Image 1: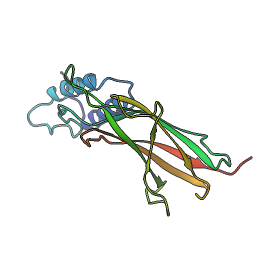
Image 2: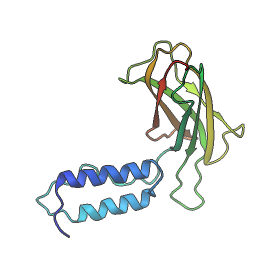
Image 3: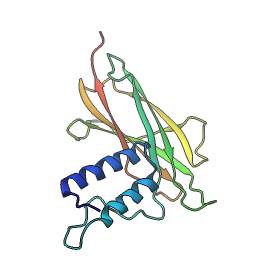
Image 4: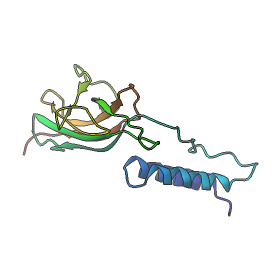
Length: 175
């Protein structure tokens, strides 16, 4: 295998992880490709910083996150919808989604005055499977105009979670 420059390798790793995070690439394929790339490094090379062995199980992930209307164009409430899915590496091994929570921050990642974490609701009425569509109608009427980050975090029955997914929300005036 030809030598790969470290900055090119880092870029490839970022693209692979982004593809897995957005659900475009299966995580098994991503980790296999990362292993293949790492195998081409010689002993004197520094191991790529993006290669992390896949754990046997990790908590629920978010496969989609949508905030609408976005931009708000004067709307006082936005609907946040997401799909939370658990990963079961062993056949027959199930991990159910137990809850999902919504967090929000300003564009500079600071707390929003008066905002507290919110519990999201399952569309079908109960958290009882390994994949749940969740939603929340979020009141943004008191938020100043500008950009915000909306985060959704899923938890399984044992309390495990994965990094959240985020979506930028833009609060604007009506037309």
